Image (cartoon, rainbow, N blue to C red; front, side, top):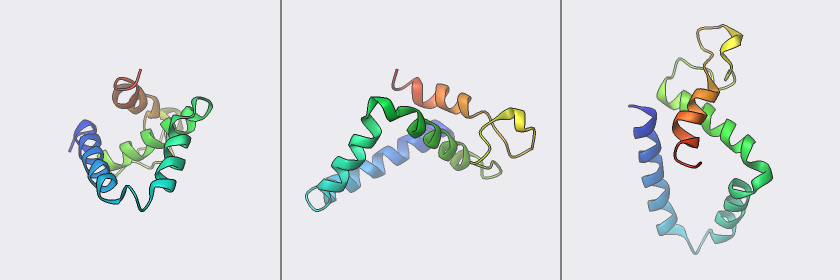
Length: 91
């Protein structure tokens, strides 16, 4: 499954879950939205998303190694995942 397909699948599952539980967990949903949309906090959220997306797309990658200069077979370009899949959709 490609990273784009993974993101689409996760988005659909999240939208479905939110529509089913919106009133019961609204306070938690509001808190999570505040964290994700806070302008001074976007970088950590983007790093986390890039690392988790890389791991979901390729189980051989270590989400703790988002730098190619680490030079191990399980490291990856976190910036590539961020720019190609996250930033392209949310400039």
